[in-house]
Image (cartoon, rainbow, N blue to C red):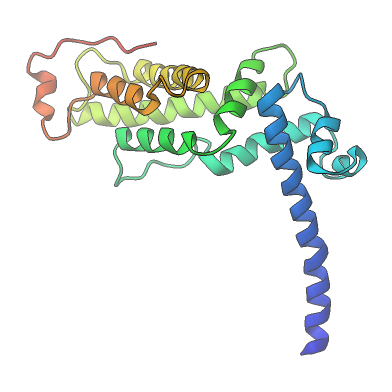
Length: 220
């Protein structure tokens, strides 16, 4: 038994070390990109913060664009990427507010997203496809949930699910930026709740949707 355990332990050792170094690089890149953006950062900046040479970093990530995409995917592993189906036990409003509050408490997550999303509109940015596809997924997901709520009499008259979905995402991104600039002055979850209250009828009283409520144009 001891002769079998020895080789297994030695195989796990290098793998664990490799995973640890990769995680250290991603953590450093997350901080550097959040602080300086993709354009304003260098691989050497990341290597310095990770405590290794640039040559060692390139062993794990062959290019700066590879590292960027790895960081974005790593971020999604923390906050979600919009592909997971909604929890049937959780309302749309509760899910949005839970995610907003969670994001506030994870250091660097909102900074990284906001900086790189803004940069992604520039020509040749390697994150452009990532953000384009992310927004498409989110619009589809929210529109599908809002359409379902409309069928249940929970969407106010005059509110289009596709427009409301795009407006929710626009509001969320915009209020995140304001919160980053003035966290003590902006209630991110409160603003999102107020918007959802404008477009949704309270679950306990869906008949209000057809009881003379004024049509409301979604924000954004």
